[in-house]
Amino acid sequence: MTTSVSSKGQIVLPAEIRHQDGIEPGQQFEVERLSRGEYKLMRKVLPPNHGVVDWLLRCPEKGFFVPVESESTDTL
Image (cartoon, rainbow, N blue to C red; front, side, top):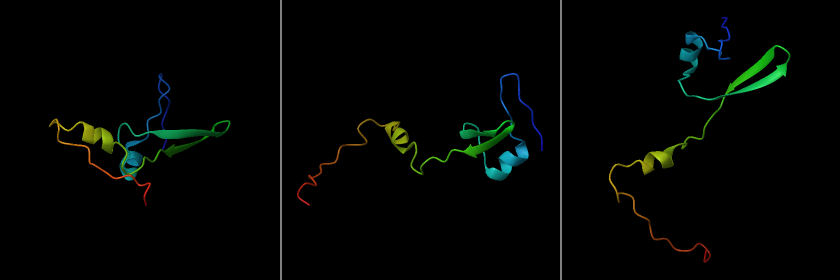
């Protein structure tokens, strides 16, 4: 498969590859230059719970989440 660089410097991954690997808009990649004309493209893997805190903070009902009383772990 071939692709080209746009006037904005963007490279489009062919649809077949995106579909096979489950690549969706917004996913990030690392690009490493191996040598002149040779590059390595790797999808950045986010931790499984990435974005959970932001998701929870968007709860529409105010006061839904309340702090939990906890004891110090110093005595353990």
